[in-house]
Length: 370
Ligand SMILES: *Cc1c(COP(=O)(O)O)cnc(C)c1O
Image (spheres, rainbow, N blue to C red):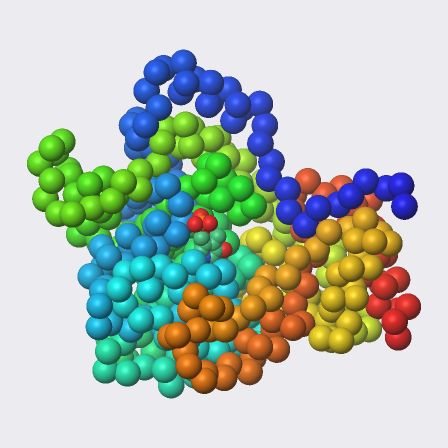
C-alpha cells in the first residue's frame, strides 16, 4: 500500500489567505473591525442577498445568539433533529429552552415533517432544521407546518453554504440562519460563524449580544457576551468567499463521479437528492448494511489508504449531555442512520485518480464480504 492517504476532509488554505492575514497583522488592528464589516456584507451579497448578516467567533455562538436574539428562552421548546452535530441541540439548551428531538426522513437525513408535527406542544416556539451534509431540509413541508402552527424556523446551515431549494438560497428561509466557518466546512475563517437575519431587530440584538450589550462603547444596554470575530479570521473568510463557488462545483462534480462509479455496487445506497434541491456535498454519505459499515470503514483505511467518516455515530438524544431532554425517546430512523452512514471523501482537492481509488476500494471491500 504505497499510494498516499486520501483524507475524508481537507481544508484548502492558499497564499491569498496568508497574504490577507499578514495585511491585517501589519495594520496593527486585529480585533473586530473593518475586515469583519466587509466580510459580513460580502457574505450576505454572496449567499443571501438582502439579509443583514452578523459575524461571530463560531457557528455554535451564532446559533446560541440567534436564539437569544429571536427571543427564545426558558419555558420554550425548539424542535431539533437528533441526527446532527451536538451543537444544534446544545444551542437550544444554552438559550435556556428545551430541545425536543424529532426523527428524520430516511432519504435526506433531515427532519421528518410528520415527526415534527407530532412533537409540537403549546410550548413549542420554533423548529431548528439542519441542512445536513449540504442537502437542504424539506423546506416546503416544514414551512407549511411552521405557518400552520405559528412557529419560527431557525436554520442550521452550518454545512450548506450555497445550497438551495426551488431556487431559494439556504440562509434566506428562517428567522435566522447560522453558517459555520470551521476548517472542515465548505469554506473557513479558521473558526467562525455567520448569521443571516430576517429582521433588523434580530440583527441588532445579535450585535448587542456579541459585544457586551454595547452599540455605543461603554453604553451597555443589555448583558452580553464577547463572541466577536477577529479581523484576522474575517480576512481569511473574505478570500475563501471568492473561491467557494468553484469548490462547490468541484464537490458536485466529484459526487457525480462517485455516483457513477458506485451505482452498480451491491450493498450500498448513494446519496439521494430531492428534485427541488441543490446539494453542495459537505459530505457524500452512503448507506451500508450495519453489519458491514465498520468493516468497510476499517478496510478502506487499512487496505486502500482511504479515509472516511461516520457523521454521526451517537444520536444526540442518547448523548450523556443531552439525554435528559429525551427520556425514553425512540427515534428509529435516527438510530438506523447512525448505524448505516459512511461519508466518503468528496472534497475539492481530490484528483480523478483519488476518486478512482475511493470507488475501487469500496467496490473491493464490499464484494470481498459478499
Ligand atoms: C459545525 C456544525 C455546527 C457548529 O459550528 P461550529 O462553527 O463548529 O461551532 C453546528 N451544526 C452543525 C450541523 C455543524 O455541522
